[in-house]
Amino acid sequence: MNGHTDNSIWIDADIETVWTLTNDLENWPNLFTEYASVEILEARDNTFKFRLAMHPDENGQVWSWVSERTLDPVNHRVRAYRVETGPFEFMHIEWTYSPEGSGTRMRWVQDFRMKPTAPVDTPGMVVRINTNTPREQAAIKEKVEKAAAAASATATATATATAGSAR
Image 1 (cartoon, one colour):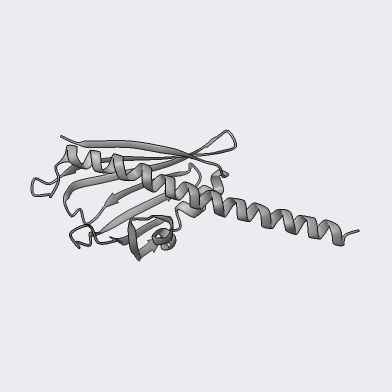
Image 2 (cartoon, rainbow, N blue to C red):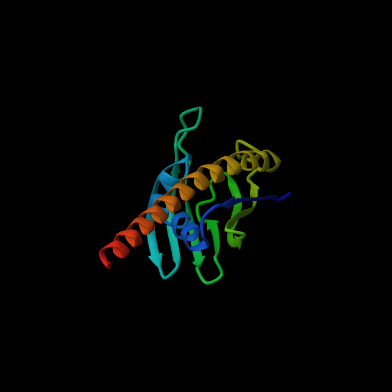
């Protein structure tokens, strides 16, 4: 049995801002609440191989894995998979971004299967992902909207100052 999750959130920011901020791998430990570190192992064109490490779980276990992520900036789509699968037999992830009203819809779809030796079975991981993803997406939404508002305020202040000095 394969696991499948599909979670999305609307972010009050333009698509380019959401795209840029959420695909800045080196900043993921600041963007996500669950990631302690990221190490980029290889970068070529729009494909990145990197190691993610989570904060220790309730038992002190630090989960870490290597993923490969390919960005398609023209279509605002990301495809990723785990290179080091850990407790997963496989994990495939697709992120898509689409303009929606005055903001952006960010959607994460994950398809996976757990190994029989994993500490949680596939249905249990579906529940875990569907619990954690909305929390992570809400934290990301808050940070991206705050950054977008700050950038907008800076642009407005600069435009106002420039207009004032032109008089």
